[in-house]
Image (cartoon, rainbow, N blue to C red; front, side, top):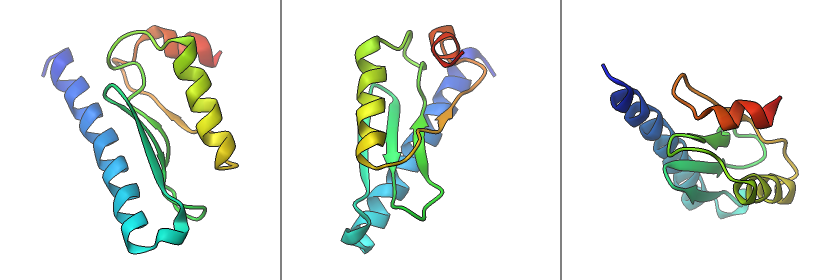
Length: 100
């Protein structure tokens, strides 16, 4: 497998987390689930008691800009949750630098 293949797998995992949140919201609108797309990355919130929340696929499309980090912060602040950031071997180094 090449770098592109691994990035595609990570993007698919991000899309799956987003699909989970959308389905949970359809089943129970009181969950206030929400998904925001940032390129192939997904900001996912599937309800207070769901383990499916966080930022998936960040850095798969290149460096993560300051405005993206601000959007991530605002999104999870509205949900009153800490942002779980899921990374992968081919995540852009800017993500790791920002998390240090």
